[in-house]
Amino acid sequence: MRVDGNAATGSLAEVFGRDVSLAITTCAHCGHEDLLARCIAYVSAMGTVMRCATCHEVLAVVVGDGARFTLSLAGMRSIQVVAAEGA
Amino acid sequence: MSPRPTGWHAGTVVDIRQETRTAKRITLDVPGWPGNDAGSHLDLRLTAPDGYQASRSYSIASSGESTRVVLAVDEVPDGEVSPFLVHDVRPGDALEVHGPLGNYFIWDPAASASHVQLIAGGSGVVPLFAMADAHGRGGDPAGFRLLYSVRTPDDRFFAAELGELADRDRIDVTYRYTRSTPDGWPSPPGRVTRELLAETTWPADVAPAVYVCGPTPFVESVSDWLVELGHEPRAVRTERFGGG
Ligand SMILES: Cc1cc2nc3c(=O)[nH]c(=O)nc-3n(C[C@H](O)[C@H](O)[C@H](O)COP(=O)(O)OP(=O)(O)OC[C@H]3O[C@@H](n4cnc5c(N)ncnc54)[C@H](O)[C@@H]3O)c2cc1C
Ligand SMILES: [Zn+2]
Image (cartoon, rainbow over all chains, first blue to last red; front, side, top):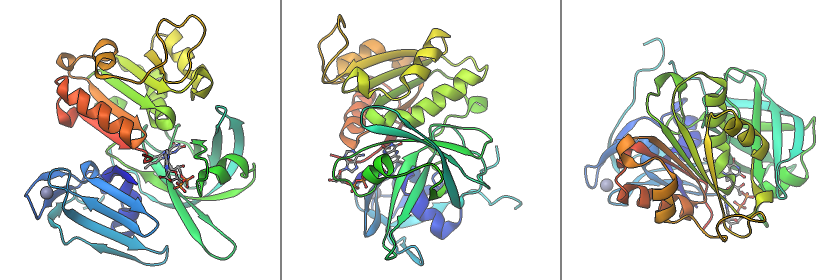
């Protein structure tokens, strides 16, 4: 099922502990810089695959079973988040 | 505005209403819920007695500082989760929810100067209704318009509430019926087209904030047309609900 990166916020919050929909990501394949919420996410029972909105290469993959989550960021050159509360 | 903490919560169903022929409005009380901004969603997780889990995203129709969370769920025939929510959930049942989520697809009255264009297909009106409702309760001067594509008059979500907001001139609502119209409706049933967008929505030169939500193919064609009509791609926010 194809949805927005915004809809992947829940799986990512399992790893980051907070909402990272407004994080700025840089694609390792084409250099496109955008809000994480604006990438394309493919959601299935297996997990979530996030793809670059410009070149469609894989940015990141999250898989998990409710007890443990694995995030691969192989296709992201960087991910920039604002400091957590209290920082 | 400091971000709201997101996490798993145990909610209790406190009210269930028929929303449309195929959808229910489900109100939860979620102790510890940090409130939510208009447009955000949550992930809802069901666990079977054998431990099998299924999780789906649902937009939140309510907003503000409350532990009451309103959802509106349409049945996708043969779906895994939505038929259960529509037919089997009862007041008093417990539901596990993760949220609030999706700070990107929200409308913040305090941060908003521009006019707002909402464009919904089917149940995609849920987060957009939350925005219209927040606007209706606040005093902000934004000019709100909603273009709502829906199969028939009986399939409209939040019809009474939207009618009341329109009567108070807080929003201008245009319905587009795709299967059948009320008697005497000026146009035959049909889909949203680029021409209809040009006729009924805020033009690009007023630089509105645009929110598009609904089935994935609907959202993708509408957002492409909006860019063709001159809207800044960054001013067009989308929330694809899936489906094909
Ligand atoms: C951010 C977000 C917010 C959402 N908010 C709402 C909401 O407020 N109200 C609501 O009713 N739904 C909402 N959805 C859709 C919801 O998450 C589920 O996809 C939907 O309830 C179907 O789940 P299911 O388990 O019943 O169907 P599944 O078992 O997942 O799917 C069964 C079949 O239906 C198709 N299908 C899946 N989803 C849809 C869909 N949305 N429309 C048409 N066909 C579909 C699938 O391709 C599959 O063939 C939202 C989705 C997202 C990503
Ligand atoms: Zn790329």
